[in-house]
Image 1 (cartoon, rainbow, N blue to C red):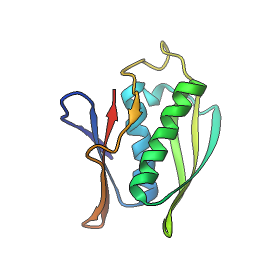
Image 2: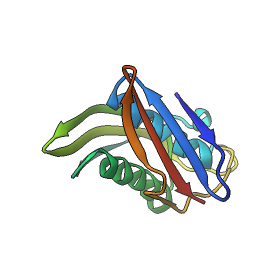
Image 3: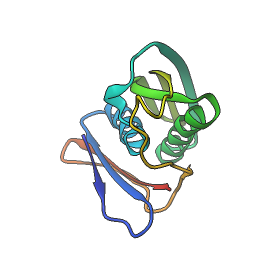
Length: 139
């Protein structure tokens, strides 16, 4: 589950899930929903993703950055992200598959362009048995 919070000039996102895998999957959907209608995208292509980072915050940053990269460089429109594993210990690791198709602005309801992921206002915490992530997208 995610929601968009008030921000003066960019997109501020709050994601809530009962697992880290769900948190990262919903972060992907929230990011792409800024740019397009994910429900209008077919799952014709799959892109495997493996990311290693020093901590959860850097992992989230690198994850969203990779999503934006695939949109910009590969014209990849996301339908869903299947995050199979998020591990935290000596650093943090993520394994996932991105499902989607070639981006078509007319078919996928072109919305707002996202320039970059930021560390601004970013935080990830566990509260009441639920994981919460807050992050800002530069538009």
